[in-house]
Amino acid sequence: MENNDLYLRIKQAREHSKLTQAMLAISVGVKRSSANQWESAHLRKEPSTQNLIKIATITGVSFEWLATGRGDMVWHYTIKEPNNSYGELSPKEKYLLGLFAKLPERRQKALLAFLGND
Image (cartoon, rainbow, N blue to C red; front, side, top):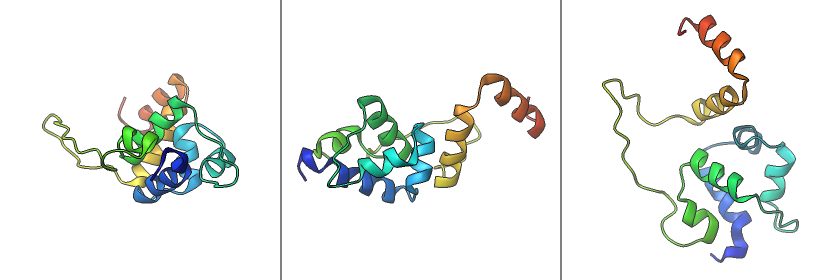
């Protein structure tokens, strides 16, 4: 796959992570139309480098593969967590974390307090 096939790699990464375009857009912090344009062969609208980094992180693919098509799609790594490892996050969990990250700090604190985790 060549670099000009970025739109295909974005779609493949999104589908790999079982996210909809809307879920990806919210997680990245853009409108759904932007995510749609990134995957469109005829529009060829490319995300900024910052958004490309976010897409790679959210979808769990290698940034190099996503940006250039070189290397393995999935970035293999091990995260060591203290005592309470919950394993890999599901697409819904990633989606919720993306929404939470967009909240102002005071609303994050309020939500955590509401959930009993202040």
